[in-house]
Each structure stands twice: as C-alpha cells, then as structure tokens.
Image (cartoon, rainbow, N blue to C red):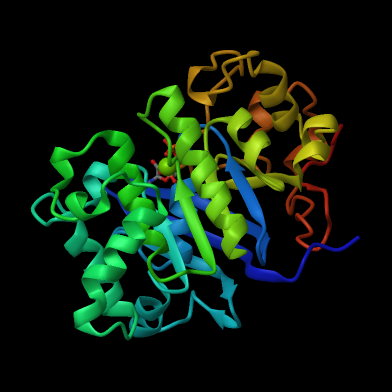
Length: 324
Ligand SMILES: Nc1ncnc2c1ncn2[C@@H]1O[C@H](COP(=O)(O)OP(=O)(O)OP(=O)(O)O)[C@@H](O)[C@H]1O
Ligand SMILES: [Mg+2]
C-alpha cells in the first residue's frame, strides 16, 4: 500500500550548524512525506531536531545553520533550491508555521488585529478597506470571544491560550495547504491545551489542510495524527500510521518511548526511563545508528554504513538493522 499523494516530500535532507564548539550534525538523511490533508505527528526527545527540520524546510534556519544536501519538494518546487523570494511567497501563504513560543513569535508592540492584517496585506489581494473585517473574521474563526474588541488588544493583554489562538489565526489567515504546529500547546493548562488541539484538528479537517504536529507528547500525537514520524538525534528512525506504530513499533527507540510513556502523563520531557543520552551531535565519530549506544539490541552490524535507509514510499518504515 502506498501513502497518499505527497504535498511535501523531504528526501535525504541534512543540516549542520557551525558553532565555536565545533560543527553540530543536527540532521542527517531525513526522509518523510506529508500527504494532502494528512495530519502527521513528529515526536522525539528534546534536541532530536524536530524544530530545526521545519526551519530548514521553510528556509528560516538561523545564520549558523546550513543545509548540507537533500531536497524538500513542496507543490512541485524544491524549497532547498528555491530563491529567497520564492520562499517568502510560500511562507505564510502556502505553508505556515505556529512557533514554539507564541509570546516570542508575536510582535509585542503591535495590536493583534494589525498583525493579522499585515499577513493578509502581504500575501493576499484583500483590498485595504476590507482588511479589518477579514482580520476580525480570522479572530472569530479561532473562536476568540468578542473579536471586535480583541482586534485592538496587544499580546501582553491576552492569556497564553488566547495568544496561541492569535498565532493560529495568523497562520491560517491565508488558508495555507500546510500548517506546521511546533509544540502548539506547551505552557497551556490542560483544558486550554485540549481546546487548542481540538481547534487545530477541526480547522485542518474543514479546510482539508495538511498538518504537522511537532510534540513531545505521544498521547497528543496518538489522539490527533494519522501517521507518526519518530526522530532521534537528528535521524528519522521510524514512520508508520498511528495505530500501527503503537501496536507494532519496530525501532527499539520507538518501542522504548511507548513502553516508558506513563499512563495518564505522556510527556517525553518528564521521562527518565530511557537510559543514556542523545549523543553529542558535535562528535566527528557519530555512529551510523545514533541510538546504538543506548540500544540493548546492539550488535556489530549496527555500526556499518550506510544504515538501511527509510523508504519514504512504504507505509511502515524503520531505520534499524535489528528491528523488532
Ligand atoms: N543555532 C543553533 N546553533 C547550534 N546548534 C543548534 C542551533 N539550533 C539548533 N541546534 C541544535 O540542533 C539540534 C536540534 O535542535 P531542535 O531545536 O530542532 O530540537 P527539538 O527536537 O525541536 O527540541 P525541543 O523538543 O526541545 O524543541 C540540537 O542538538 C540543537 O542543539
Ligand atoms: Mg523544538
């Protein structure tokens, strides 16, 4: 069985950062795809490369970062080779990202209504006389109570949950075909978390929008995603449909994540049960399998390069020489 027609197809993408402490080999040979209208979860411990992956895809890596190779084809265009203006046109309009910290991502000294208008003015042909009305509609679409009044609010006047809704409204203002939501519920209380996730899921369904949910929270991914991509130390180690991944994890790391996810609390950040640490990504002798030093199934063959590549065309694929 094949995956749905890909909207975004990432092939063998690599990223490194030049730092004073050495070169950080942040991503290596990353391959996965997102189908039209599909919701995928990207999970893995802190530092596994989830955010950097989508910064690279959307052309917003910081100056120390560089794409070392690979492709990221979105709507027929390879974003790795796209010009700055092509990327600028795609970001915000075709592909939007909700960043990890909404208070940092929002402009603190601009009214939220104006921030939505900025996006509409930049990316759509909305006449200026209609901008205000469209911005208020966008606020209403993410169920912000009293949108006419909130239009004039500054981010600091709003709760974390409302700021997150504003971020979603900005991201969705131009009806993108791909939404990347990076830890969209971090820092919110449990009730608000559920409301924000339900809102994202509902809007994604209504608009047939492909969604990438980046999260530490396996439970959240299980609840909202069709398919899950598991990352460890800058590699994709496994991808599978959600139910299949939980029922039959094949990579020892995935199995460990699932087994050590405590019932009721599914946040990877609170896990102490996976032995060892992510390897230091500045090492020049990083092993072919970056999990091998933490893996109880390790044997000599695991050190050989190249490691079996993830086949992005397969429904369930695993990068492991000794899968379960
Ligand atoms: N500007 C940078 N300079 C050097 N290294 C960086 C830079 N940005 C990210 N990295 C490194 O890249 C790796 C991946 O970082 P990334 O932020 O993508 O992790 P993450 O999976 O999103 O973690 P978290 O769950 O904490 O958000 C880490 O080892 C990080 O230290
Ligand atoms: Mg991150």
